[in-house]
Image 1 (spheres, rainbow, N blue to C red):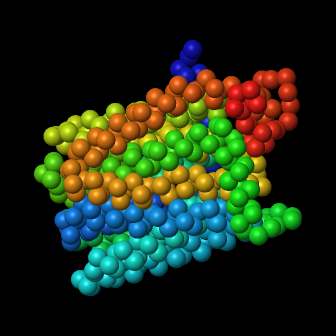
Image 2: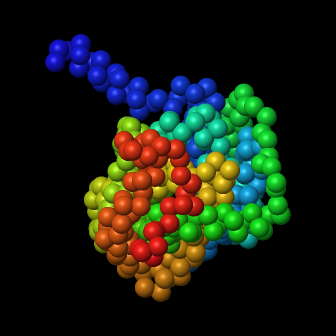
Amino acid sequence: MTTDDKNLARSAGFQGILRALRHRNFRLFFIGQGFSVIGTWMQSVAMSWLVYRLTGSAFLLGFIGFVSQVPSFLVAPFSGVLADRWDRRHVLIATQGVSMVQAFILAAVVLTGTVQVWEIIVLSAVLGIVNGFDVTFRQSFVVEMVEGKEDLGNAIALNSTMFHGARFIGPSLAGLLIVAVGEGACFVINGVSYLAVITSLLLMKTGPRTSPAGQRRILPELREGISYAFTSAPIRSVLMLVALVSLVGMPHVVLMPVFAKEILHGGPHTFGFLMTAAGMGSFTAALYLASRKSVVGLGRIIAIAPGILGVSIAAFAFSPYTWLSMALLVFAGIGMMLQIAASNTFLQTIVDDDKRGRVVSLFAMAFLGVAPFGSLLTGALASRIGAPLTVLIGGLCCIAGSASFVCWLPGFRKIVRPIYERMGIIPGAATGIEAPSELTLPPDEH
């Protein structure tokens, strides 16, 4: 192969990674959200450090995490029904606007020196309610922005790449700003950053959203969505594994201030570096997923990713060196991102469009809704047995979940393969698309 051929191949590969950006609406969203999530990561780091500085309590770190995310668990199922009815772009403009106001209020109480822990709790709860709607509407809106399913997996992976790529900038910048001027500046920057994504949403051109015919009351539609998801063995198993990782694997993040200060004997900058290392791993994994041209093989990734996360955080729990902790968190970020993004891509590929919002809401419940219970459990356990042993237990549970899914992987593939054939994803004799509600095990395999 000549040098020109190699350059052409590299160019084609790079363009393949960015192929979803050819869609104007997704390109606008990608740019606007790219600025916004830098502010989001800055606020997340500043919030954790502020709580720990004010209280010195590992339990309150977990409790704040619980309060900020548990509304998603309660709101997400209903937001899923509404996402199948309402104009998703208009709702996203509203959620981003409310989030911007929340950030500015938080900045005001911190900069004036009047901040109280109860105010942080209330503002965290407000943001949690908003996120309960925002996540469901945003995830289900992706398929509208890319105008079809052929680039859906790439768009989801690029969105994850952008979100975790911002972790290179956000946490490190937050750590430096906290040392220099305090946490308030981070909240101000986050508030301003919402203007970018709101502007991108306003600039989009979308057709009128038609509500599905024959709408029923919310509760019957909610039950229909739950039945649709949980009578499908692949969807059910993926959601359960996501929930397990969210409960015992992801909450190690809420204890990062403890590790930065008490274990590694550092400060806000150490905290920022640890978060950035995890972001580096997530960014790398998201780039890999964006480079994939097909959803085939995602089952294997979904199966082994929790094991990578579990081994990494179990080793991190007792690392005495900052450089080693950062290296281990890179692998933890890889495992977490592979599992969450691959699961999201798989679910959105096989779901029916008229039930997309409800299935996405169940994914949001498993991913974000279960996490607050993990945060609360992690905070309470860490206050009794210490942060290292708590994180070790979470890592071992992730390893066990991964091993269980690996054992079931042949059955998973057997059920999913005919669906991929009918959708034209892999060669097969059958044609057409089969609904996920028909993905249940054959009668002789129940």
